[in-house]
Image 1 (tube, helix red, strand yellow):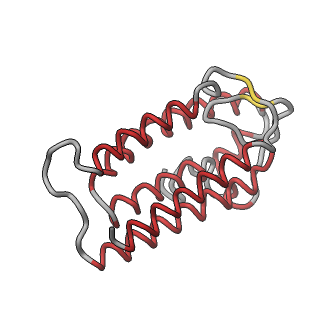
Image 2 (tube, one colour; image 1 turned 180 degrees about the vertical axis):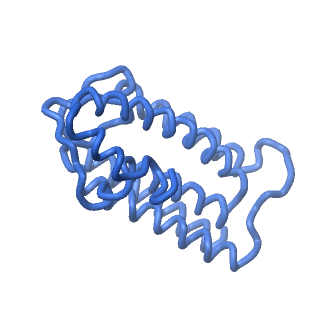
Image 3 (cartoon, helix red, strand yellow; image 1 turned 30 degrees about the vertical axis):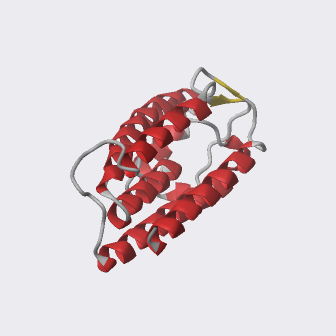
Amino acid sequence: MRVVDLVIGVGWLVFWLYWLTASTTAKPGQGNWVRFAGFRVGIVVVVLLVLRLKLVKGHELITKDPVLWGVGLAIWALGLGLAVWARVYIGRNWGMPMSKKEDPELVTTGPYRTIRHPIYTGILLGFIGTTVAVSLYWLIAVVVIGGYFIYSAFVEERNMTKLFPSAYPEYKHSTKMLVPFVF
């Protein structure tokens, strides 16, 4: 096993352990997406591990260039750092995608000052960095999770507009959904 694989693997493990621990402080939520979230994440992880362990025959897609390892590690660290920073700022208002919270608050500080969904952006950057540094097999996760996060962001935008009819449209106008200054 290469050092880059170990660093990213352990890093993701620490990230998800933090994420699960931090979720215990969130306000109670409602919605069907909250149920069986661990099962959905588990399916994605098992599929990726099967692909990574080459149980599925295919082309060699493992990154071998040390420059790409460094670039991928930097993108990965930036992404997970952004996700954690956003999680700290959203505090007890955090929830599974598309869930609704009791007594919701509109958070517009920290990373939310420029990006409306910085947790999605950070996790996607983490997967993109993993793809660049480790293997193109992770591109599957980027596409699947990216599609899910974009769909979730649009659903959440509708919900937030209903919850904060006077404040959210102004906030939406002054920020970008996922990519600062772009989208």
